[in-house]
View 1 (tube, one colour):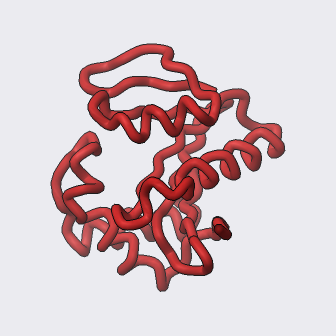
View 2 (cartoon, helix red, strand yellow):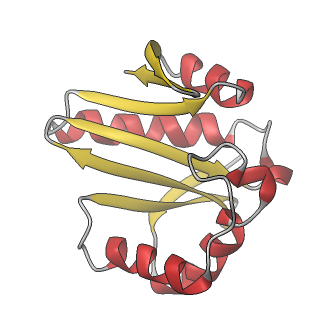
Length: 148
């Protein structure tokens, strides 16, 4: 299995919109509903143009786009968010992607902590982040807060 990460580009906007608007993906989001094309393009362009303090990465499995990892930077912390197409879950792709991103963040030296907010019923995500060494530090509403 070959998992790679690359910076999102303009040609990824349609794939990211498709991924974001799948009910099996957005059901665990803070805003669990589809987004408009216009709103999505505006959101992605903020990352692509560097107007947002974060990064948007495309997860590739054997060169095929299968998901995304988003990093949002705030002072000495980075919040990570990940989405994978349903048909590629359970293959270790998300685990490897999070490991790669955490290695990248730690080697960059800017962030002391990596954070993840996980919907309380998203057991697969909870297990995956715990395998990566994240520990739960609290809960706000329906979201568990994890830290590495």
